[in-house]
Image 1 (cartoon, rainbow, N blue to C red):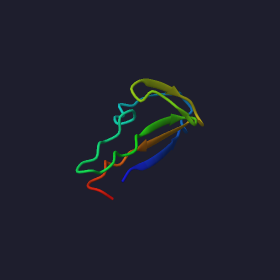
Image 2: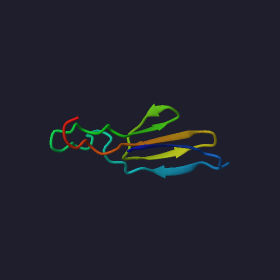
Image 3: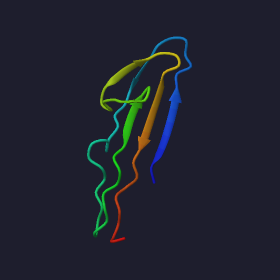
Length: 76
């Protein structure tokens, strides 16, 4: 099971954030005939961004982190 986390910057000062998110390009593989999991994603203000770099965010901007679940196990 994956999860989605939505954050909003409330700081008056800009903040620097770094993400080292994995599994955003290549999803987790399945085993014994199970399908792959979904890829994760990182969005800033609704736009998909590179999960391996640093960003400066300002008040009111949002970050959505969608973490993937694992791959499937066995045939459905």
